[in-house]
Every structure is written in structure tokens, then in C-alpha cells.
Length: 134
Image 1: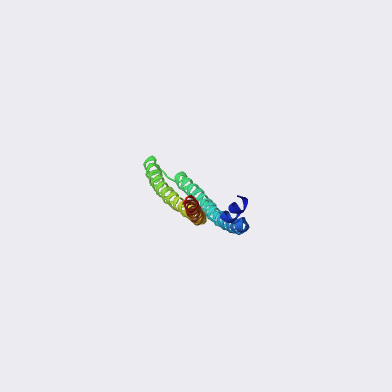
Image 2 (image 1 turned 90 degrees about the vertical axis):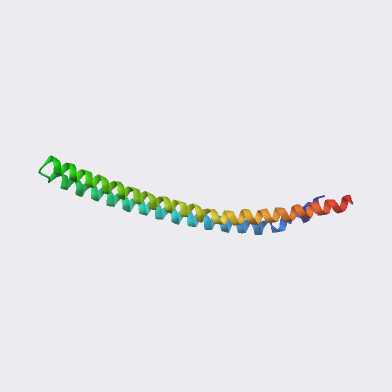
């Protein structure tokens, strides 16, 4: 029984599968790290740009002479700030979606390969069982 189990699963090849899995895990870690770093950089740049725009708007707001001008300036700023925010969130959302796809790819390949190995082994076991029963 032990010999049949050893032959069926080829434990000698386990180290090869382990090495392959480790390589894929390291690639996934590397791409995830780079993707998160890019997102953090983008977020920091947007935060800096937004802060500078807020300061400039406040300085402009202090220089207006009438209440109507202040309302117009504030309305214009609010509209442009919201448009900029929505554009940035769309961009960051796309970056997260790309990161998820990129991170999932090595795992997808590993799952597909493992499924094929198990399927092949199961077919061999089923065939061998059918031959023994016949």
C-alpha cells in the first residue's frame, strides 16, 4: 500500500512543486509590493497637490471684496475639487484593480496546474481500480 501511494503521488517531486510554489509566491509578493508602492506614491502626490490647492484657494478667498464674489469663488473651487477628487479616485481604483489582476495571475496558474495533476492522478487511480475489479 505504501509503495502504491508513493508511486501515485511521487513524493520525490514534492520539492519541485514546493520550489515552483515558492517562486510564484515571491513573484506575487514582489508585484504586490510594487503595486502598493505605486498606489501610495500616487496618493501622496494627490494629497500634496490637494493641500496646495486648498491653501491657494484660501488665500484667494481672503482677497475677495464682496460676499457674492466669495460665494462664486467657493462654488467654483468646490466643483473643481470634487471633479479632481473623483478623477483621482477613479485612477486609484483602476490601480487597485490592476494590482488584483496581477497578483491573482500566478495563483491562477498554480491552481490550474494543481487541478490538472490531481485530475490526471484521479483518472489513473480510477483506471487501476477498474482493472483490479475486472
